[in-house]
Amino acid sequence: MDRLSNVLTVFSLGLILLVLSSVRRAHIRVEYSVSWLGAAIVLLILSRWQGALGWLSTTIGIHDVPLALLLTVFAVFLFVFYRFSVVVSNLKDANIALTQRVAILEFHLRSQNESTQA
Image (cartoon, rainbow, N blue to C red; front, side):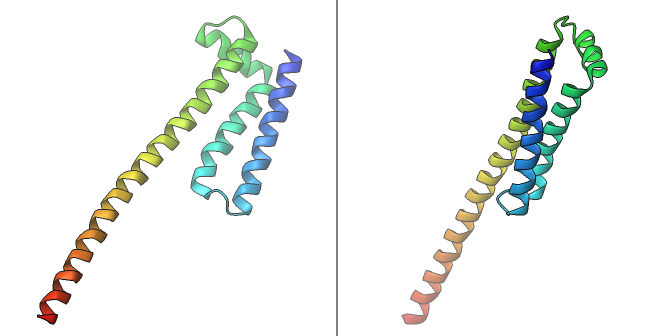
């Protein structure tokens, strides 16, 4: 369990540093980095605080603490991925609406140019 906790601690600290450096370099927007930072902090807390991890494993009914930790990590990151899927879907819908509005504006401009030339 100690080796798994140490690996997950290093992973979560690396994720925190990666997200912060990406925000600093403007590779990721701040509102999206909050989800990643939250997930990394939850992972860091669970990998270091054995009491919370023991409570969590008994609460969800898994008596193997490392398995409960990995299941929780999976659930947290699944939530983050779901959130980003919703964001991408909204962006795609907005992109389609914007493309349609541009096409309508182009149509109106062409029809005005044709009416002024005639």
